[in-house]
Length: 371
Image (cartoon, rainbow, N blue to C red):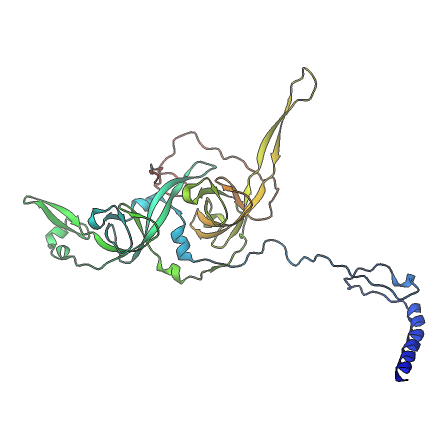
């Protein structure tokens, strides 16, 4: 009996409310995002609302998470481009155990030109780096092979130098006799030990003082867009190959002076190309018509700068759709299929003055033997 009473009450409620709802005009809120199939006031029955899924844009541009970069390891494993003047004045390895020319971890070696104790990076010059646009010398690409540190030693010969001899000698020099009647200025080589060898360490390699502050920096590089327009070119690729891909290192011919800093993310483009069209118009006896068209630049990758100097920077490729080549353009994002202006810089047809370069004073092209 109770069930029948409940059923009758429900039916009575529906019968009473249906006409009232049909006569009322229900209006959708202006802020409603639902798609309505038809208006309410044109129907005599309860309206039907259809909700349709749609794509909602929550952000635009590139979303790159913070990259956990070990500054020290990256600086060791990837080459840098440095002024040749710095290489010319750098300390060098001159001797190792058993007259060997290659050294490994734990070996005691000796260096010339060390002015202060500490830890040093071992490197060698790999090749000269030229600007692909102007063919101007930018510096030398170097590859790091290990770490060595100084050892304390006693220099009794220097302590025994007389004041009279000191007037004719440079700092750290003393006289040694090669013959009872001949003496020559001499310096004591700095004893060192190989702490770590990533690749072969050779006699004649250069040394660079390790900046211990690198290890105290925040290792989370925060990627960000450049603060100004960037017009850079890829001038060098790690390992000396002609093409690069994801997670390889490239060198750009722009640095802090060109608007790049650590964490700057740039897009890599295949630059615009001019194509000559030579089509026959089809009429007999007429000459074919020659025209030139420009193929817009294509975005092919992303790279993040992890080290900068005044006029050069090193970057790691985060993404690549195709191979990255020397001469490719590095600029801010959003220029895919943009017909970039690419005026060739006029270069004087005269020998390059070794003392007049844009980036590095007293630099000149060297003859580096590949290894």
